[in-house]
Structures are given as structure tokens and as C-alpha cells.
Length: 230
Ligand code: GLN
Image 1 (cartoon, rainbow, N blue to C red):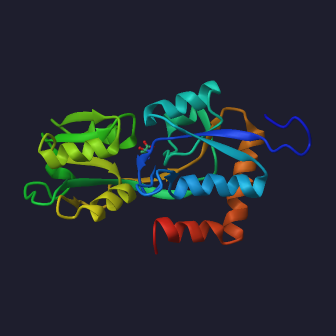
Image 2 (cartoon, rainbow, N blue to C red):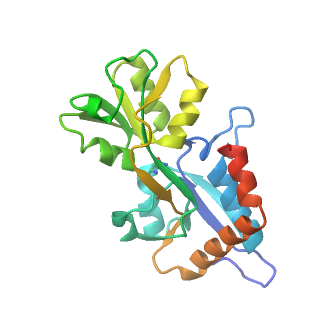
Image 3 (tube, protein in one colour):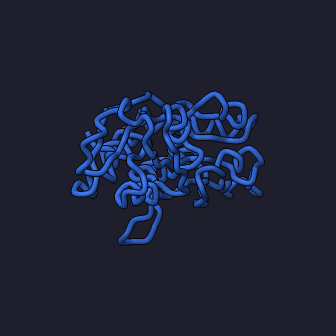
């Protein structure tokens, strides 16, 4: 893919959805896309000798775009799971996440997952959070394209709770603690992987090799500390 002469670096397209801080989002000051995933995939490209072209899209379309070859790489906090493994190949896991619940700061009825029964739950469409919400008895699940819009619905009272990835919830709740709080801890353990087209072992091997190099040279730890903390 890409290299016409030996010196030209291949360029791969990278799809992500940009309301998923601290993994991928638009920096309000610079207007640029940034975050853990964005810097991670760029760093993998640097150690493996490829350039990346960032392509923002709806989360729900990412796996399909990688599957058809419209996009080379999906890097967007994508949980490695059974049904997606049928569509695309994933890198080695690069981050352990999980699901969590966000409610309004003044909410008193909802203190954990049991209390979500029969409630209105906002989710981002096509996510593991959306799947989880649909297993809750009597709940009404409301899909949004963007996590930030789903959160707004909770704030406005149109939904009672958001179910979404825990580290992302933490980021947005810390940004607006007067509006939101987290309840119920971590609901499910999940691992993020970087997606490529099925059978694209050449690219997959570069990504895995890059991830391992960044773990060895301390760059992964630096990015983790910068974006996620601890
Ligand atoms: N990790 C979740 C999933 O894969 C959500 C990802 C996202 O919204 N970017 O479904």
C-alpha cells in the first residue's frame, strides 16, 4: 500500500470518532484532533515508517469502513469483541477499559446498575455501552451519534443515565462535576484493539510491532500518563 519507490513512506488512513476524550477528540484551542489513540497511532507510524491520514467518522461506520477497505486502520477506543472479530482483525489489546454509568449530579434514585431498570438510558450508537443498556429490563435506550450529545440529554433530563466507556465518562464528569456524577463503578471489563482489514497481516504486524516497541521504549507509558493519568 502506498510505497512507489523505496524512500516513500506508505500513508494509511485512520478512522475515529471524535467525541471520545481522552482517546480522540478535537482540542478546543487548536482545533486539531488529539488524544491517546491519535498520538498512539502516529507514534506507531513513526517507529514503523508509515504516515497516517486522520479521518473522522461516526463510530458505527468504522468497523464497516475498515472491513470494505475504505479505511486502512480503525483506532477509536474500539472494544475487541466476538462479532467485530468476524468483520476485521484486531491488534494485540492496547488498553483495558470497561463500562460505567453517568447520571445528573443531583440524581438520588440511581446508585448502581440495578437502579437502571425501567429508566431512560442514553448511549452512543453502535457501542458496547448501547449493547449493555439493551440488556437492562424495561429500560428505554436512546441512541446518539455522539457521546457529548448523549451526555447533554442526561443533563437536560431527557434521559436518566448514560452508559459508556468508564475512562471516557471519567473525563467528561471531571470536566463538568456540577452537572454529572458517576455511579456503580466499572460494569464490564473490555480491551481496546486497533482494527485492520481481515487478512491484512502486513499492516497488522507493523501495528503490533510498533505497539511493542513503544512499550519497550517508554513512549506508551508516557502517552498513558499524559492522557489517562497515574
Ligand atoms: N469501546 C466502545 C465500543 O467499542 C465505545 C467506543 C467508542 O464509542 N469510541 O463499542
